Length: 140
Image 1 (tube, rainbow, N blue to C red):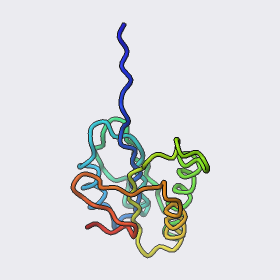
Image 2 (cartoon, rainbow, N blue to C red):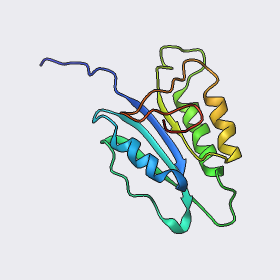
Image 3 (tube, helix red, strand yellow):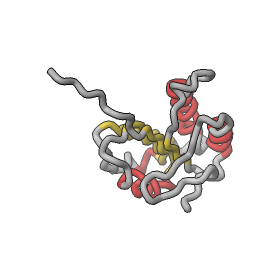
Image 4 (cartoon, helix red, strand yellow):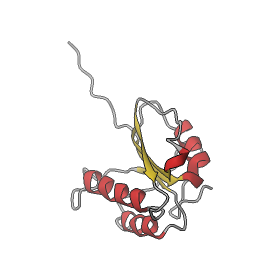
């Protein structure tokens, strides 16, 4: 049997809240078929989970927010867990380029995590399709 090792895939993390759903849908639609990664969306529990069609190896995690919960708390916690799993300090080989979008602009808990994620030069932001994502989470 002739085995071929698959080349590197696009590893994505797309995260945001209910205000980012349109942008998230655009980003997901622009992903290559071989992309893998996670989409994290925090929305009010009454909104229900977002309907997104993703490549086979991209999962969508809905983070329902109750009416009494602070906005961004579930998203910030999930981003922190993602970083612990995927960003290994001191190992440049494992810290390959990740394609990131972190929305939830103005939500302090999420902004704190966003700043931590972008401290190390190996945590690159790159274009997802034709949509360019900036450090602040804005689309250009």
